[in-house]
Image (cartoon, rainbow, N blue to C red; front, side, top):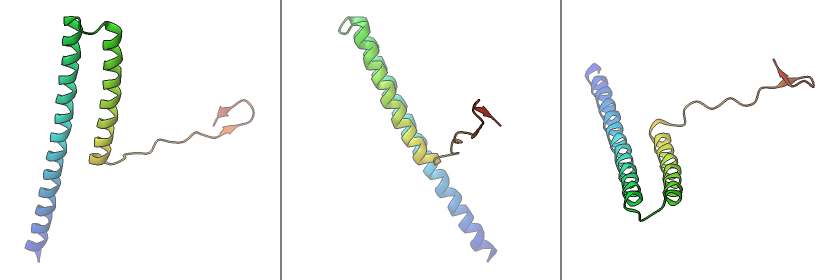
Length: 98
């Protein structure tokens, strides 16, 4: 009975580690694609294909997309985490919190 329990724990730990390794690989792949795209934008700016304003606009859009994708992937991997606390109730008209 004890060996069956040990085998089940070992199997569960193995599956957990395999899942984490796959998830980390996906995050690294996303990061490398992000860095490559930033490099392309920097090269285009240096060569004069795009001006500074267009470069800034593209980098801002890229950062927003990357941030959203990374947040979604981390949520899938690690879960939603702690919920943020709501607003605290206020007392009286002064709006002081207690």
